[in-house]
Amino acid sequence: MSYDECYVKSVIRTIPDWPEAGVQFRDITPLFKDPKALRMISDALIQRYISSEITHIAAIDARGFLLSAIMAHQLNLPLVMVRKKGKLPGETLQQEYSLEYGTSAVEMQTDAVTEGNRVLIFDDLIATGGTVLAAATLIKKLGASVHEVATLIDLPDLQGSARIQEAGIPVHALMAFEGH
Image (cartoon, rainbow, N blue to C red; front, side, top):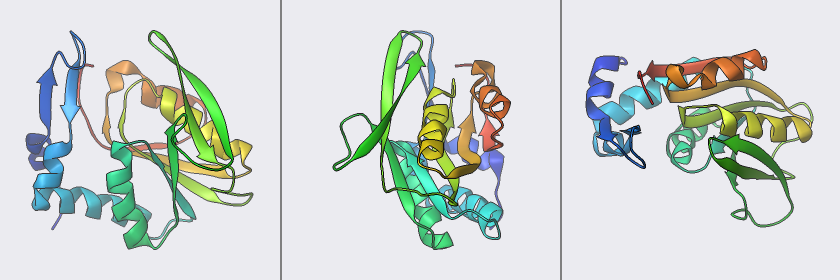
């Protein structure tokens, strides 16, 4: 089965004005109820990385966990988590990042990756890029390198993927949607 972007986009729901007015929320939850669409996106991502030099997949909380777990299993790679502050047990590193109004923070366990690891960061959607850049900072602080960022959806109007690429990190998106 090959990847059919039009089909997958038709499965993703757009919910207007959620979580606030003016936002067109791209809801990927219907993909998990559609085995055909889930297989298409999983296979497309797995095929991209099957012969790559990545050693780990770093999944960003929370919807990024779902697809990255499939990828890690099929690629036989360790899956490490980048979670919201206070959600991981044990010793962690924290990185703050800016939001439109205020700041937030993500964490990784200090033993998640080590020097020499080549990490693929996966998030379900790139908007402003803040979360991904914070995750990349944590990975580098732990001595590993970021091979690439993969995402299901890019919102290029918000310039997140451009910011990530300006930081020297390649971005691979399966599809893009206009707007917020």
